[in-house]
Amino acid sequence: MKLSRAVIPVLALAALLTAVATSGAPARTAPRANSGFALKPIGSFDTPVYVTGAPGYPRLVFVVEQPGRIMVLVNGRKRKAPFLNIKKLVNYGGERGLLSVAFPPDYRRSGRFYVYYTAGNGAITIDEFHRRTPTRAAPNTRRNVIRIPHSQNSNHNGGQLQFLGKLLYFGTGDGGSADDPPGNAQNKNMLLGKLLRIDPRGQRSGRSYGIPRSNPFVGKRGRNEIFSYGLRNPFRFSFDTVTAKRPRIVIGDVGQNAIEEIDYETLPGASGANFGWDPYEGYSQHEAPFIKGTQFPIFAYPHSRGGSCSVIGGYVVGDRQLRGLYKRYVYADLCEGQIRSLRPGVRRVKSDRKIGVAISTPTSFGRDARGRIYVASLDGPVYRLVAR
Image 1 (tube, helix red, strand yellow):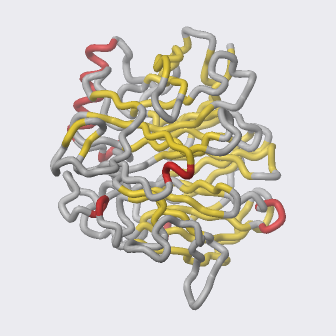
Image 2: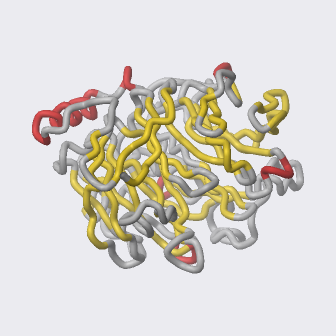
């Protein structure tokens, strides 16, 4: 994932310029709408990289700013004071920064929430905070949950937090550089290049978090925190709670030079799964020979498609007002800018297509407590996806 406009890598910027020149879709901060959908602006922010709601507070929407603040909107109006400001803790620049926030299901009662950021030494860091009021956090309640060393390279920091029940899932990048030189993603003794699952409140024996007994490597070779491995940079993932009785997981794993991929699995199918990096990039062999049991993506697309460079994973739409998108997965690409949708399936996808709206440099999708869908632009605006 390439963030922070001032330091977008040259190749990504070149891809963006190529897309502008060849696709007829100029870079812009205002969205284009020529279909049954439109993007309604909700405000402008400082490098927004994530949008979410909080259980029990349907009137609130939270926007994560990469430099280290979380802003809050009440009934669609942006508050001047941030919900949380941890700029002093955050190492900001390029792909580093404050990257997401997650509220557990019992948030209204407990007041606890969690943030994912890169610390001064580059470490991937998850901290717990408590709220003071519904629109203000209490910064002095900070408790570190986990810290994963990531000092060698500044890229591939992952960045997503998601709760499913009381368990916290988060995706980590492979440690950066290119081609994963240390082989972190395939190394089950390392926490980089993984999807991890912990109980953030299950402190035991001096550890600041608990390990679910059902994690696939408990009692086996490998770190107990690992849920899935073989990921390059799962910058954004989400849970599909719409299309099936039991939740499924959708991962947008950022590719390297050629291919972007989307992985979609049942939770039992994702448990212990090897998603293939770096023996494979998408469906294609990248470095090492075939590894038995590799879980291939359900969908992949080449960088030649509209000058693409980094997949921005989204959500399966549960908002019935978005007719034509209900039960479809929305996603985008940082350089292409088009918002697209597909119908996911464990074996394959159907009807990948543009939905008719585009913005410049989308960084993330979001979903609020009402199930409404948002998309953020690196340029500052955040929009809600609405029917025309």
